[in-house]
Length: 416
Image 1 (cartoon, helix red, strand yellow):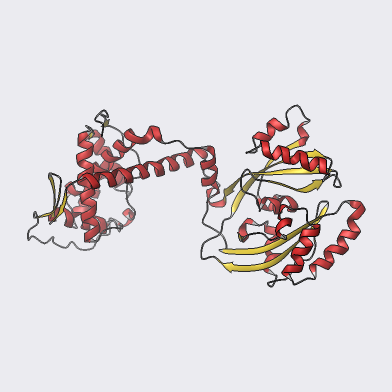
Image 2 (cartoon, rainbow, N blue to C red):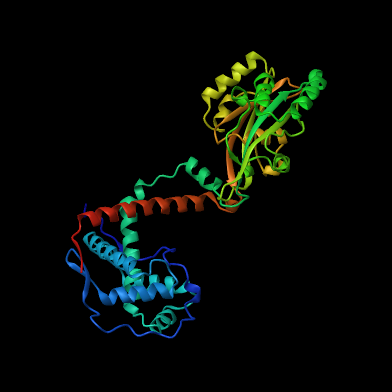
């Protein structure tokens, strides 16, 4: 590795402390450390040694913090890693200043609402030396500084990554459904005929018959597949559809659902609990570009040409340039506030994908609908800056793990 990086840590970043600090002041009675062979080597790492004393100290320290990895094997492996970290940071000239070390110790102790001396005293009451605490903090922060110096300029966070992170969540019902759909255009002059047809379709319990109707009458992109949609989380469907879908038996079809200039029907083909929490979204952003001509061949061809030119919602501003502002709408709405027909189409789209199934103005205007992004309910209060910071730390952690694997592969490690 290059020896060009020379740095001194004078101010420490937050976030290194492990869980469980809140209970630190309520230690059990101390148990004496076994005095036999305390300084016998447990492992040799290049020219350095891991001693039995260090293993017992680290185990005791982690157990007091209720931290994972406190078993003997994990602790020995962690101390071997620490030796490699110490050797590498020394090679690059990274060393904490006394002020930096004091700040790091205070930061760690502060997570238990203790001063450094109070924290050290509490550790000592259970047989953990101050040096064990000091060494743990020192190697952690010096290694972090090394990783930032080596790899920070390689970490780039795209807008797409930020949007995906904001859409990630771990809340919801844990149910997914398998449905088929039919959306039949119903301009005013055909409304009565379409209503009669939709009522007839709603009586079927045959998936084959429903698919045949979809191929003949549906305006959605799924018509070629007989209206069959893939498995999808229930939470991704519009909230207004949840009770309608859950009320169906397998093969049953919803009653006709009126939407602007159309009628929608859904058939349930399967339902199951996933074992994983579903997603709930606090906000959905979408764009609608309006094309005169409804579902005419000419307008649909124009929509296909636009689809080939755009990848994101921002690209639609170029398409709508020099046109009246009302031809393009971009909205951020809560899921329950989105018009039902738009919500149904958005539920089938990933960011950047498009639907041309809907119309407005009694069928005379085609809606070119594009999904922009979803924000998970759990992330509603997160700023983009916070997400960028989290993603950056995750990528730096990946570089850290890769470097440690390489150091282990190159090292002479002997377990005693």
